[in-house]
Image (cartoon, rainbow, N blue to C red; front, side):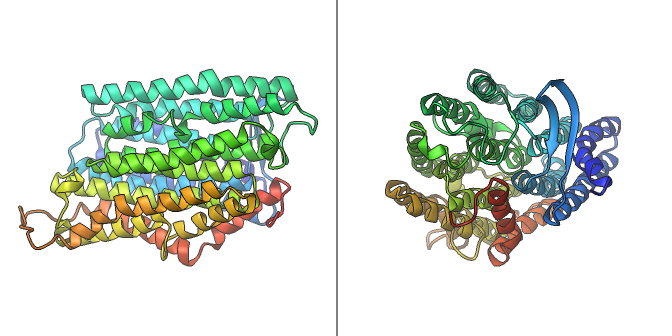
Length: 496
């Protein structure tokens, strides 16, 4: 093994952490502060890309930091699912930083240094979580991610922001301590290990009732996956600045949630055991209900960020469904949906922030005719909407296709119909926004001629991410190959 690879693995976690000190030291020099942030994000992306190339070439990369007791240590390993998450997070950290420079400056946000510090801490936690070799390590970074993003949610310091922060912290900490931690402890007692293992850690003769209870504790305990009824933190967190919303929905928190759900289903329970558990079907239908109800609620939201927040709750349900289907198509669909939703949803939030900065509009009902003044922003919104809906020529097409195949393979026709209905609801709450922006109707009269596109930095960011939505449709192979490699590592062949 190349001796530099373990170092690069550790640097992906440590560089953002070290960046916080440099950002704090240069807080009074915004240009230098933001240059440091971009430089560190480029270095992290460079390390992640090198690790990815080594993994695809067959390298095995492991690092151990600290052994608490035999078989319980803080350690890291590179495997395809974590690699996919790390690639998305490292790339979108760079793009979100570029976007934030334009947004935070033009919007005259206070406490920008604190914003970039917490942003870097969150990315450090994401990298540690992505490469965790066991549940113990994952739980540590899962909690660090919650705590490091709390100041971002309460960034504005208003009473509304503080209330949103209390809901955010309250739900995430309560679910993780009451359910997630308990599930980890029970897994330790039943199996004697917390290591992520191909095929799962439970014996073939395990009591399925006990394993089913543990699975339910895991799904409810991973609050960041926002499955109903533990989803309220996500809309509450929308009081944060738009770059934070983009971080929460695409780069860090919610993706950490569904990544953890996939990781637990594949490497703790295993795809052979999951269908045998008495709670799997209940959780599958609960996730399906979450998909539909969140889509219906999204349709009723006039505030654009609130509409996008409930859309995220719905889309996360897709990934949970794919994991619980316990088929190769379900795993591939869920893995690809992590990527396609990341690019689609971050673009939508970038557009929402651009609209707010340029026109001071936050309500859907106020955006009629906006396409004439902001054609690039509304064009990007249209492309990202297609990806979330799951139609060509956007990347969400492939992930939703595999998820539908998973429902057909398992005979869950109700779930299949629900997913198709949800896509129709996606059309209903997303497409009218760009349509009315470009085709406002005969009675429309422009209220202002002063509106123009957002700052160039923000515009560049949303162009890049919207192009990413298109590229993942035209050239999905890199994401698909990583998704297939997850099955190989877990001991399942595609087509099983």
